[in-house]
Image (cartoon, rainbow, N blue to C red; front, side):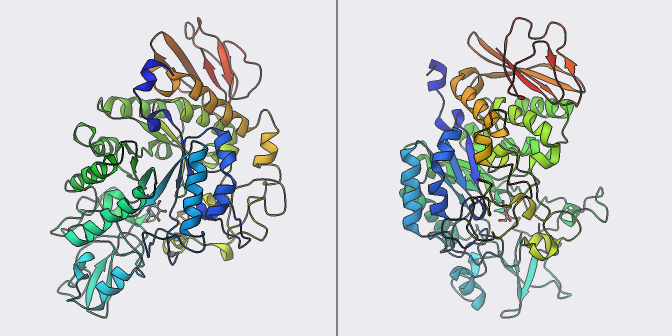
Length: 527
Ligand code: NOJ
């Protein structure tokens, strides 16, 4: 290990892999993925070369939002297996040098959680204050104008007590009241429970919503919004999200994680503009290790735009802040569908050569694309609550394609969501055997990143950008690597003087590297 590399934590050098457990591997033939399924596929992940897996929620849940509606924070839903299965998974992962991160859902519970069942039972129940209850407006309507991310008012009138409760997401996902000391303490105990069990960290769900304005002021309307757009964007979420008080909680999360031998990781889900996002590293870096940076997902694909994003992000990061990059997740259209199959290879090189921890979403490494879901097979509640806007998330959640067998090696029965129609050719088994496949490209890039300290922990410097090309250098000591990405569908010569002293070592085409010329949709790594 290079001297400078030793100064970095595992999660700075490492690569994270997101598992959406319903769709990764079904071990018991019920059409839905489960924990023993993940354990059975750990060798694949170790071979891929990632350092940690983050598993989306596996806790007991009525599955109104597929596990993001938690009914018990310290158990495992029978659909996914048992606590024993999870312990076995963690042990097997650790044996292979893989860390395990769980999803922590602090903003809301399920309406079936015993805490909420009690809370809604009467106005004087001891757990009443664990959730956010408000009287109706004088006209009987909701207490203010806050809207749900998933459509409609964020307030639900509960006839039992004639008060409204607040839900930033589905009405089946009532928001916890983090201003209640008892609820707050109970939720920190949840973290302790898993950390004590050997979990290596968390991805924190819906973090920006966790604390809301204590005066419940209306959110200002966004004048830029027009009918036909996502209704959530009709408001500027000034009072319902990203409150200054949230930082105290974030600091507490971090302190708690740090009290476990200093190597547990806290990542936050934060869809925020860059200047707000970086605030979550906390004063002097005492906040989150990694506030998830989703800007590659949110930025239109193009050399100038992407280069501009990297510049802006790099410039905004304080010295103590470690960057991170994400191309996709279970909530957003897949990168291969957004940018096309050819450019997805360029995107892979970008993700795995930028400065900062990359997170790979399951299936990205085999180029999985969004799948059209026939109306009768739609599962995601968002497809129903916000129809016609293309916001349903089933297309990016279809089962992992392992092989060409009847159900893609994912299950022995028809899976909960349809398989992509090209799974017989686009799958792990066939791509493992194909030297130029997307999987081979991911493996090569990951291998190179691991073997090259300049790539894993070196500095970043933009070298050149135009409408088609984005070229940057990663440097550590005297070692320099250059990455040249061609975002266009035509051939482009490397600009005069750029990289002349360097030797191409890897093309995204995985063939002989043609010095000086970038072919259509090609990324080149030079050293
Ligand atoms: C973000 C999660 O990623 C998404 O899947 C979920 O629906 C919402 N948070 C609510 O928990």
